[in-house]
Length: 347
Image (cartoon, one colour):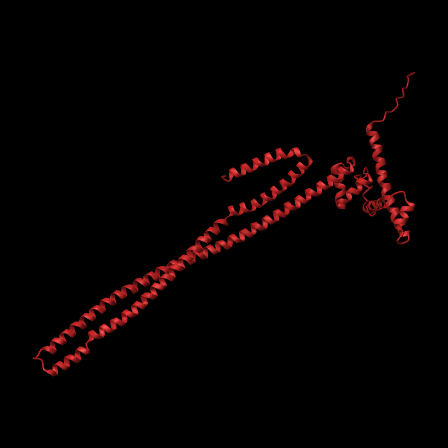
């Protein structure tokens, strides 16, 4: 007859851990139920006596009464999935569940599943939630910086279009001013030529007038010429066209000189306009150069680099606060980064 040997089952650590977690889950259920009962009790206690009721009748403090009520409100009231299909919260302690209230309700279950919250201390859980919030804050800052960079890019593109328009206008103005200068110089030269021509005509007229006067004088001194003829010669000399020509030439010369002065003024104004137009053209070309896509990219990326540098400084502070010995290697590495950037920029 075969002997049947009975072997006593020896519990393993996994068995004990399972039982602890089951009891922990019951503890959280109990805490939530306490919260529900507290809401029920508060509706029955006379107004103004709630704190007195807790002190005299209940075995926990007013702060824990509030905690139990928070647990019921957040996890028990209208929360059908907490202990239904989802097992994410089954192994949590009430203190852990309270820490999770710092997160939006829709994110708590995923956070518990992704971070093994049941094995964390309250301090570790609080730090993990803080780290998550810090990460989200940095993400929001990064998105904000990205949006600002995009706004800067669009503004720079608009500035670049405006600058190109200004450049085109400046070029047209410069060309127009240069043509005006050329025309003014031609007008000045024409006026100068006219003055020289009229000067010659005046000289010729004056010379002819002088010759007529000399002929008249000789005629007067000649005794062989009758007095009646002398009178006729005198009237002819006075009315001689040479004198009129000289007077007209003098008048035209004065007008020509005025025209020459006007041409000089016009030329000087045209030269001034040409200089102004050239200055505007140079400024527009410089502005267009600064607004080209490469410069625009440097501007945008530079802003992102500054933002990233501020983030690095924040991480450095945390690392040094955690261990002052981190300061030296971090500073050494950052100095290498700065040296590399300085070398890339040509010193």
